[in-house]
Image (cartoon, rainbow, N blue to C red; front, top):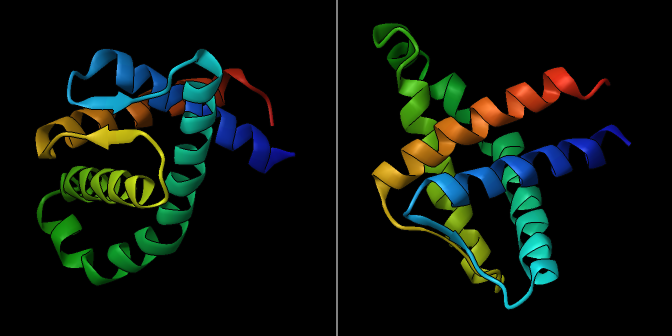
Length: 122
């Protein structure tokens, strides 16, 4: 049940990012298709973060220390771009235009997810 709630939270955060960042789009003819696209992208985003983020943290430990954690912003933007690419490969209408859009989108997804995690109990 916790995984389903987390996917819904990330999908909501992705929706907010599509509304606030001009370079991030989630297509769909209807609201239902857009919602399903966001749920699919949230699942992909969760899988990408679960698999790659620990590896990147381990390998890039020196960069995190050297930049006082700001390297995490670059990593999150890269993971957002990778999520966009994977989503397009599986036929989901989700696109991130470039690095700046990915950076802003990753910041928004992180902030909105954090706020929703505070509001929604475990």
